Structure formats: structure tokens, C-alpha cells
Image 1: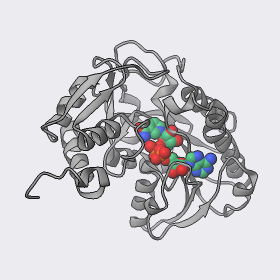
Image 2: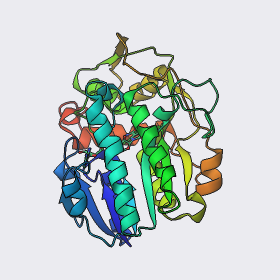
Image 3: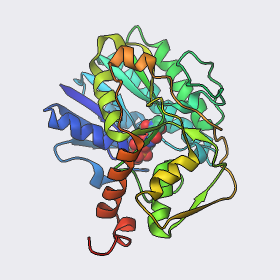
Image 4: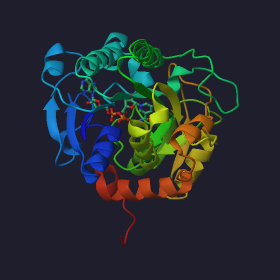
Length: 315
Ligand SMILES: NC(=O)c1ccc[n+]([C@@H]2O[C@H](COP(=O)([O-])OP(=O)(O)OC[C@H]3O[C@@H](n4cnc5c(N)ncnc54)[C@H](O)[C@@H]3O)[C@@H](O)[C@H]2O)c1
């Protein structure tokens, strides 16, 4: 198939594109490299560089893509407060532009990178897709608005909105200390051995390994039952920040941490109800945090500058 992957220079988009190319699909990748990197784009991708909020970039897209996998966007709740209008452009306007492109070109489906941030504060139970959405960050508001546009056009362009929880693993940006809880902590652990935790250690999250996320995207792109569904893409496991740090310390033994300050718009705790995901995509088995963490730490030591300077002796 001919598949448009936006955000192809980013963490998730690049890994998804690599998998699709390995499966012999034709991948048209788009990125403006405002956050991602050219070196992330897998060989074999037909790259279009440009900002998807701009009409000129949309006009440059080929007209015969079967699927749109839309991962381009601003991916940090914290950064969304710096410039909420830029966040709106990157997360909402790009989506609306791609919906209209998809309708005009009779694309089969648009799969959207939504987020657990749409929910806001929730009770300490696995959160189902039917929960009320009351986002706490400009980022969450934008993701929810984008879902709203997808619903409005659903009869002309079927969609799937994947509400991803905390994605982590090899390929994550270890230089951006404002996006990605696991990568931020790991970068600091390898760099200085001292992790700065912004917010309580009792907060809890649902950490989902990159390979499981890529698998979810591949299934969502094709599964008939996924059409016009919002799906939690998490594991269902509740992990506190303290537990996350302890798992990391299993692989970076000399690290310590301290708590100071907080992140605006942060959720106290959230983890996924995965029943709907299991029913619709058949995705029921996930990489355990310990196994995922081991692979992530190993990758960071071998492939990143921050890891390279702190490789254990003798390796
Ligand atoms: N990483 C997570 O845990 C997570 C969780 C939930 C949702 N998401 C969403 O998934 C998507 C991918 O996340 P990621 O972690 O790979 O982020 P990322 O920052 O690594 O990748 C996003 C990519 O989009 C590009 N981009 C941004 N604005 C653009 C624009 N206007 N036009 C073209 N390209 C643009 C960036 O340069 C970057 O390469 C994002 O939309 C993010 O909000 C991520």
C-alpha cells in the first residue's frame, strides 16, 4: 500500500515507517523537523519536508495515498503552555488540513496520534474510552479538538484515534528534557546519575513500549472493526513514578533522584482500561516494563551521546 506517515522524523513515526517499509509498503513521510531529526527518517522513505499547518505542504502531498497515519505534532503537555497557539497549529490545524486532504483524495482511513491527556483528572481505576474528557493542558485540549474534527468528517473519511499513554523505548529523543518521562529520567540518570523529578513520586502512569505501539498502529490502520473508534493504546498496568525509577535503577545501579517543583497541567495519575483495545485490535499482550527498560537502557548506552559517556567499563 501507499501510506502517508506524518512526523516521520520523530520517535514513533520513524519506527512505524521502518516497520511498514519492512513489510514492503510504500511510505511517503512528512516532517518539518521542528522536533524530529532527518537521521531518524528510515532509508526508503519518500520524504516531503514541510509544515502540515501550511497549505503549500498539503498541496505537495501525492494524491494517491491509501492511508494517512498522522503522528506529526507537538508532543509535550509542558511545552504546550509556552505557546498555545503554536500547539494548536501543530496538533489541530495539521489534523484538519489532513482530514480535508483525505476527503478530497478518497483516502481509506486516517489514524490519529491522540493521547491519554484528553482525559485530565480521573479516578484511580483503569480509564475506559467512555470516560468524560476534561483535559488539563493546552496539549490535551488540542488532541481532543482534533478528535472532534475527525468525528465530524467520519462519514467521508473513516478514522481511528489512538489515545496513547506514556510511550517509551529505543529511538526516543534523549536530548529533549521536556518530553517523555522515561527518556527524561534516563537521560539524566546516564548523564549525571541524578534525576530531577518534577512532581510527586506517587503519581502513576501506564508505560507502553514502542514495539507494542507500532503493532497497535499497524493493526489500527487495517482492522475493519477499528473504524471510527477511539482506542486507549496503553498496557493497563499502573506504575508509580517511584516504581519506574526503581526499575530504571535495576539497570543504572548508581542513579539517585530528588523531587522538586511540578509540571503545569500534569495529571496526578492515569492508566488504561484496555478491554476495548483488546476487543477491536486483538492486542492483549504487552512488553513488561522491566524487559522494555532493559532494552531501552542498552540502546541508550550503545546509540546515544549521553549513554556513550557512561558505558560501564569493560563493555
Ligand atoms: N510519545 C508519547 O508518549 C506520546 C503519547 C501520546 C501521544 N503522542 C503523540 O504522538 C505523536 C508522535 O509523538 P512522538 O513521541 O513521536 O513525538 P516527536 O516529537 O518525536 O515526533 C513528532 C514529529 O512531528 C514533527 N512535526 C511537528 N509539527 C509538525 C508540523 N506542523 N508539520 C510537520 N511535522 C511536524 C516533528 O518535527 C517531529 O518529528 C505526537 O502527535 C504526540 O503528541 C505521543
